[in-house]
Image 1 (cartoon, rainbow, N blue to C red):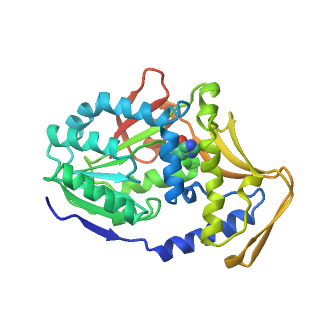
Image 2 (cartoon, rainbow, N blue to C red; image 1 turned 60 degrees about the horizontal axis):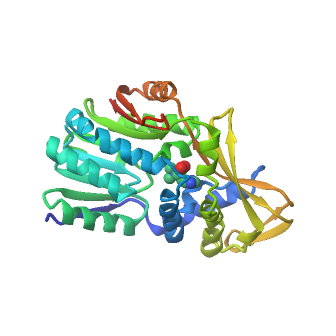
Length: 322
Ligand code: AVJ
């Protein structure tokens, strides 16, 4: 096994500063909002893992089944020497991609990128043990602003899976895709996983499950603020809302104050008033149409090479070249 390396471009104090800035901006805006990236402390990541196993939450298993079906084709087309995985999440997807890229092509290096050092150490350990011929080069960074920190050299494929692109509004996606396009060399590729617009009767329960796991995941952002700022939110006084916004074609998650409250955020010297019934946005999860997705990729300078969708047209994998 080749000893894994880890580049750290984002420290705990950078993350702390970002949390403070996001909390101040979001809690003093009208309407209030918080960015979804702060869901994912250890408990939030566990809750998300639990979500992916819920009967109502189809995206993860749909993407995984689709990837299983087409990963050989992707690997033969891509002929990647380096797999860069942005926001490297589930080990199951990674394993599928790595073994296909190894058996169908010249893969030599795996570059997982994440904001969490511990997640990356875990990934490096697992992948190193299972694929001893691969060099693992972890990158701790925020994928939205540190693309230029990705290692160069060797034909790369950048994978951005899971539908996380849906957490960005159109302008953010344009900037993000444009940034990826700029760091890629001609002939390198992006593999993008994105949720598709589907029946709201399927979509809404996926974000509002009967067991209440998504509600707890949503409220977890308040626990994160409580422990890290610290703040004194009473998470149980907020209801979970999952709303399908048909105009924007996104699911919007919100927290709704069930009573009037004043919240104190000690480190920010901030007190925040919530009216009874006030709603705070915590996430958008945009869903796409294949035409729209390829148009956004084209606008960012990508050439869509192939699009695969599942048989219910709920999820798409897109291979795009620079
Ligand atoms: C991990 C961002 C893809 O938007 O579906 C799951 C997060 N939010 N349930 C998504 C999430 C509520 C998820 N992503």
